[in-house]
Image 1 (cartoon, rainbow, N blue to C red):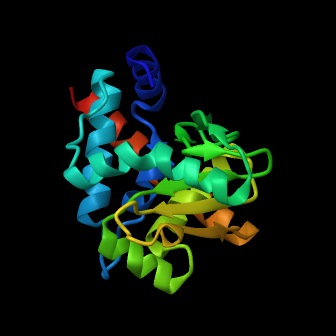
Image 2: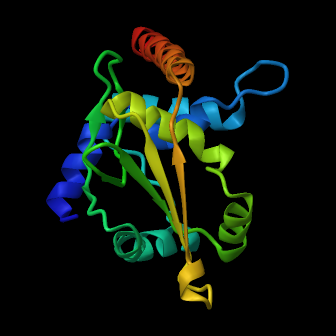
Amino acid sequence: MTPDEKAAWLAARCGKLTASRMNDALDFRKDGQPGARRIKLLHELLAERLTGYSVPHVVTDAMEHGLEYEAEAVDVFVGMTGREPKLSRFYEHPTIENFGATPDRELDDGLLEVKCPTSATFIQWKIAGVVPEQHKAQMTAQCACAGRGWVGFVAYDPRIKTERQRLFLAKHVPTAAEIKEIEDAARSFLQTLDLMFAQFTEAA
């Protein structure tokens, strides 16, 4: 992604709830009150709406590793499946304003979410053999925003000694009920954000 492309991508997402933060939006305590991650996300998006600038996020070593090996993971996926995905784009939800998603890659009939985690996490995922629970909300939101029926989960770890064991593939096909649940949660979150924006601007 060129600097201009990145700037346009950040501008398109500024102040909006995106699939990658859906898990944070769903963070509630056992007593039903908003959790710390949900509150932080509300404040970050409010800041973006009030300033027009995207809130910067710390890029950890693990995140750097994921970015570095994403393209290699896709190449291995192509070699294993024979399918050629293309880079995706930012999708605005067709009916929910300020809700969107940027899948990592897309195919004619679906989407791809690519992860290059730590080796311990990769091994845990591969042994479990299913889409990790913590990524289902993101992938369901991607389907809702992009209008696709499924997301392929692609996990890759180049540090595994045996080459054929370095890739893990799973498929997430959300039900209509799961799509509705995510959409309802997105609407509720955005209503809260709109209320916070109104209270802040009216107080000022």
